[in-house]
Image (cartoon, rainbow, N blue to C red; front, side, top):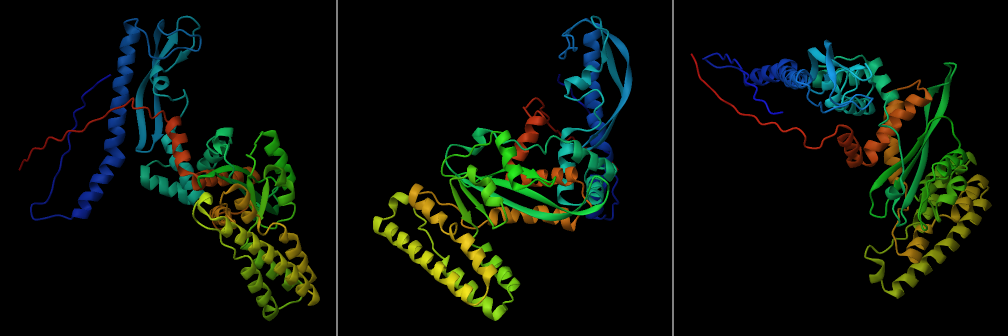
Length: 449
């Protein structure tokens, strides 16, 4: 269908000058609240009329009934419809309905042709905007922001329902997403203020898995907010048949049972070198140590862990340089064992035990590079940044979460933060952005006194 819609814009300006800001404001207000919704309504009504004429003439509609019929219909009245969009709420006064001669079912062909369900009240574009706003700020503030941007007024409770019901938060990890080249697997968790099934406040925990391809791009693996243990999360990955290539490295902190539960998904385990000195501080403090005692221990750990790998390609690194790095690792491990003995001798048993448990996973980023020639992170900064974004939303901008609500918000945040391009591609496909609509704008001006 091709149509030409003529509209007019009446402009009245004071001859002795006017405010440019007011002109911008009035133009924006006019188009947001009246012009765009009116134009959209007119286009849809023209298309609806074209479909009505096809029914009257006995032509074939571009859509079919559930029974498969696509040509034998009779008119069956009309209904008004209101649809909320990114450019305002469109009020359609008369949407034609037809009845199938074969099965007797009634539907609105125009709605079906433009990809809307019979009772759909919002577009996918508006849903995307709402989800992104709710992931950034509270539901109440998101409702105000969306109203300012689209002139669509929706309650914050409705926004919450949209977040709970959306399938955009679903996280799937097909084999092609991971790839065949070994990458990295990051795991972390954080606590939040939640409520249980009986409405009682509780200290809940959310856990996140994030993947990094060999190219450096990230992808979400999963979010668990129902109190699952790391072993239960590992079982869930097995059930989803998530498999990582040989040589994949797991980068994490020293959270209890984390590395043990996820070890079967990774060939190597690398303890975050940032967390080792940090957690040693808390362990030594629990032993009764003070800053003057802990500082030298932390400095020694930082010195031992400061093994840097060459930035050039593995093949370009001389063999003598590789042997030198191997020697550095051997020397560093001896220094760690010596440090453990010194810490024990001072009576800091918890700190010594922590360093001993971390010792086997301190230099696996070097061993992996020597074995495979592939660099990998030695710190969990990627997942830390992700958890900081999630924590900001579920701790500082919300509380008393239910498990499903915090899980949905966290999944949306994880998908947006880890790979915005894939998030946008998902919505582009859902909105059927396939160049089926072309618009042009022509401006004819006339000056009157």
